[in-house]
Image (cartoon, rainbow, N blue to C red):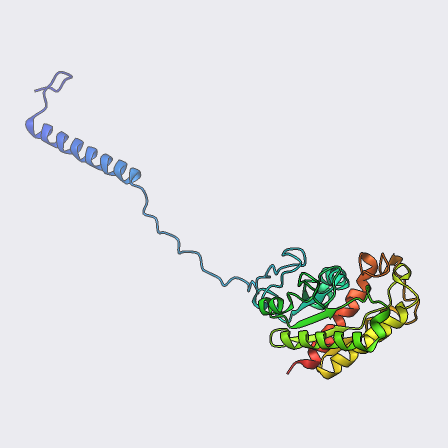
Length: 280
């Protein structure tokens, strides 16, 4: 039988042809499947953890002179180690110099609470108030390292050099110092400078000398140190008037403004020296 375009293949030929076609289809599908299958990936190892550089201690934001009220004295746990905690008490001279000391406290690694009272004496007034009315409660509340007592002497009069006045004042001051001794830390008395001209009368210079003599006697009997403020500010009776071009005492009595900073720095250094000497 002749082969031709319209010739029908034998059954065996058709079987061979179908087998070939089927194999081709299977092989083609496998190839396609192989091409479509996502290649297997291996996850990269986790990044190695390296030790970070030592960060060092975190700097604390300790209270600053203006971050708490002037009469406040933070506990030692809130201040930088080694900070000297100072309470200033007394009259208006204490109030003004205490404020200047507080402004300059960082130079001496100190913190100052100022609780001076203006226009008063340590003797009780008719209403029972005095410069010293709150000394006992102040030290009991704050437990300072140093209590600095400044009694400026602006209102000293002709009786200051008389024996009865001196005796009465010494007895009152002695009683006050003993009443605060348990909580006051190291107690220091200021020997007060001569006031300026507008505060002077013909008795003033002698009155200040008598007053400081009595303060020195009380300090000696009570084993209390003194800061020679008069020697620093008034090496002569004229006293030092200016510091770096600014008045040391604007009104002749009260330490205030930039001119008081040198006195404040010197006083803080003296208190630190005394406290170090008293330390066990």
